[in-house]
Image (cartoon, rainbow, N blue to C red; front, side, top):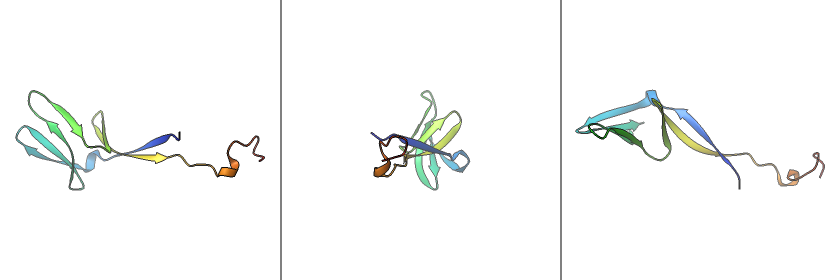
Length: 80
C-alpha cells in the first residue's frame, strides 16, 4: 500500500469570520470552512480538508509519493 504524505498550507490570515448568535462561521475564499462555538460549550470544528493546529488553520491535501518506473522496482544495486 502506497503512503500518502500530507501537504499543509497555513491559511490563517486568509480566513474571515461572520458573527452569528452563539457562533462564528469561518470562511476561506468566501466559502464556509467551519465554525467556532461561543458560550458554555466553546470549541472549533472545520470541514474535511482543513486542520486546526494551535492558533493556526491549515488547508490540507494528500499527495501521493512518486512511484518508480516498473522496470526499476525490486532491482538489486540498480541492475535489472
